[in-house]
Length: 259
Ligand SMILES: O=C(O)CC1=CCC(=O)O1
Image (cartoon, rainbow, N blue to C red; front, side, top):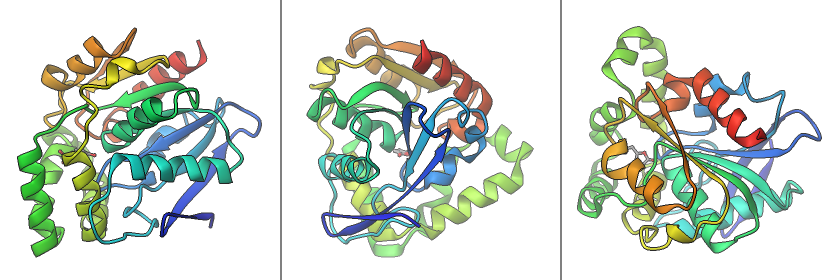
């Protein structure tokens, strides 16, 4: 299993897809891991070389105690890409993964060929993240599981796919509380809002009509109005769009990334 040691943590990554094809880095949300992309992989693997990376503190990547920053999480991704022999790439990130993508686009212009921002935002309510971080550090993941699942997946999807819902819930609860809290601090402290007008790579903003965490109103629309030339794809999905609408998401991404 490939791991890269970056700033004190082992970061887990996996390369898939067609050899020699353009590289697409796929990043997960807080409280999930690279498996989030599994349902979309079948629709992406013939077109792209897929580099999936478990965000620090998530999946098989190590969780260090303390607050993380978007800058640290961006450096993790860049270090893994270097170790995998990749200098420039397209990136698609869900929620926290999209925030990391925006940070890379801003701090390392020229590295990202294209950026896909899936159900994400340049700003979230800092006070509620502070509360969530404190709860997780004090009481563990179970204490926030029901609330977080309500933001991840729609009631309709839960009713249609109860087994998938249970897998996501198990992954969320299995997430290291230190890793979740560390990444929560990166979300709480992000300073993207005043900077994203400088994103220079072509950007696709994907929103979910059922997303209550980062809906079009107040989140996606801010990205669309501020990132120069940003394009929009609306999907019938909640926050974890790669699970609720994998085929439509992959089709939209492929069309944007290959044209
Ligand atoms: O609001 C949530 O719990 C969902 C979420 C916010 C950032 C992220 O990565 O997921």
